[in-house]
Length: 317
Image (tube, rainbow, N blue to C red):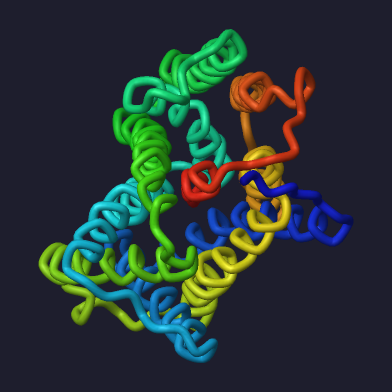
């Protein structure tokens, strides 16, 4: 039976807040990365966020998820949805601005339709999706191609491609996450499970490569950015995301993708002094146009959502 879903004014306000929070994640990451190396930042983010969600789950009287097979699934989800994209985005942001990184992250839904077309039977490409993907890819090509012709160095080009790769990993996670739709596991438990699994996988990687115990103690500003990234942009954002998703469905919450780059660009411009070039503005306009074509709500606005659609919307910045 399909559930009728309706967005009220407060739900739209929460959606706007969520977009601002996830846009802010790029700003907080940029601040934290000034003193905390990328892999250590990934580890601290997921450990703190997982601990916060564990406390919330226990406080609500629920059990933490268990079972070897389930945790293997969490590990795969954590690899695709956290470890790989967080690492690529954080490393990328050590060489490019927060606003530019957020633009490439907006490619996630466009890559998702390509992965879903190849990996599923019920989410095939149509004309609107093809147009959306082509517009998005043109936007990315505009940014990278003109930057390359303007003499961008190799490390900058690799940083941009790393952020594109993060969007691709989120797309794989979004399709892989459909399998949770056939279970009775609470979404917050899925969020905790993948973050906890990522923490276990990330621990030896960060310790071996960056030796965090040998690093200088970060300033209060970096600690504040880290805690904001973990508690606000990850743990709280998960709770906010699932609340909106339950009330408004996957179609409505997909609009957050339009808000994130705008929020990130405004914050990076006002607070970090970053400036985007004309080609960046053209590129983000093409990507947003591609998202609009992909969304398709100007042609048809469905008011129902399947459980599988709910779980497939789990990509994060």
